[in-house]
Length: 608
Image 1 (tube, rainbow, N blue to C red):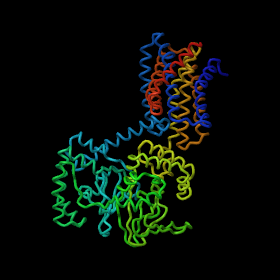
Image 2: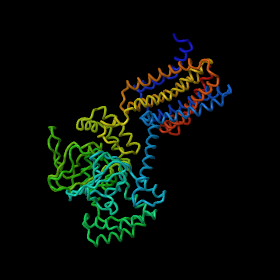
Image 3: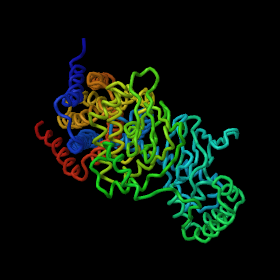
Image 4: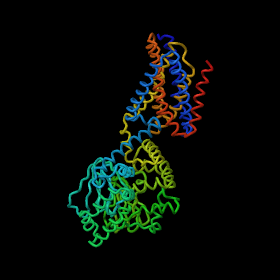
């Protein structure tokens, strides 16, 4: 039989945390927007701040326990930071928007340091001043390529310097099938000669295993030439190298006179940030007239203005295929959009699918839906006649999406539309739940300016953070441990403060409401989320009950230490997660909302 004090502590703990499942239940009839959630979180943060100030810090100071209080605060804050980092690294960061943003920023900083290290290993960039090297590194784009994914193909513009960070890239020359492939591992730069000469690629590059690659845009490299004398000197040395001369003569079929003319122009222009193209890439703005029907046939390009279509056309380049040549195969990643300029292309369904063979005529787009979602090709395509295709690469499409709001909105609308869902379920064969989960991730990525995740990784994405649900649960439990201990220990000396219970209740509700929406978007069922929050409510009550038992007869200084640990952990949580999350969602209005929550908790003290 439990003692009355223990029962009271249990009930007070449950009362303070009953807003957790209540927040989940609210999602049944109300899915608040980010601004509303941010305002509620700021209000709860203010209420919690008042509770720990009045009921923890003030009472400990009144009893002369400042040294123990201070020690507890430092210990509690340090424990929260350490455990919070461990939990976030195992997927617990998914519980709040602010922790997601912080996780991504840390990954970005880590990647930035990595690209610096990779660039320093390349002869062209050795000797650069740290500031200049950081300028170059900041412009690099990080990209992940699955095994067998194409990095670049013959005829592609050399718009990027590719630097292999992890994995392996193999390049082959289709014109010389007997030649062994060139293998590039960490620090390797496949296609470097094409990049420095501004010529179309003459080799085909494929990731032979999952690889991470840094891509430095050519225009950023040229800008760095103008501000960095060491880089300009290194570029001049490379331009004058005999290997570049051989490359232009043998692979680009330039005459000795053409090579000399280009080298003289390049050496004269490098210090001014101009590195001319040795071979002109076939891009023609006037082709927009012919390509626009194919562009407009895609849902993401319908209704765009001529200016937006012109921007897209400027990213297109022409490739040619002979009769019978395969353009792409079933199962390949759809990292390119093709528009038929001349000729005909046969679209062949995979074996075992009773679907009609199709033919793409001039002006028609190939593989548009798989390209948008970066899924794997469903059809194989073969040139029926000598064929010319206009190509839009995924990297160029991502850049367009981030630079042109109209294209961004078209993509966002398409992702959540019925046409996309039907394609992913009916054609690609993904489960409806997987599709919805991916759409949520893709939409958030597009809105935040990040690259869209590949639809091809739907089946494996859940394995990236297998422990995420447990980590989220542990993260929220970590937030609640200090409060339960304080409730139990406080009851030993008298009634628990109404402002403390109110502050905890008001802070728990928006946290549960916000996290419940996020966890369901991650694919967790409502029942699972409700169980997680309900179990935390029960554990908070049990923690309070144990606190009322454990601290009976304890040294008075121990209470000051416990109050300090709780205050330090709670204040660190407010500053580290609640306030940043609220500001991220609602902006400056959280200042007033925090003040209102602070006053609301103080108001409850007037009722005692």
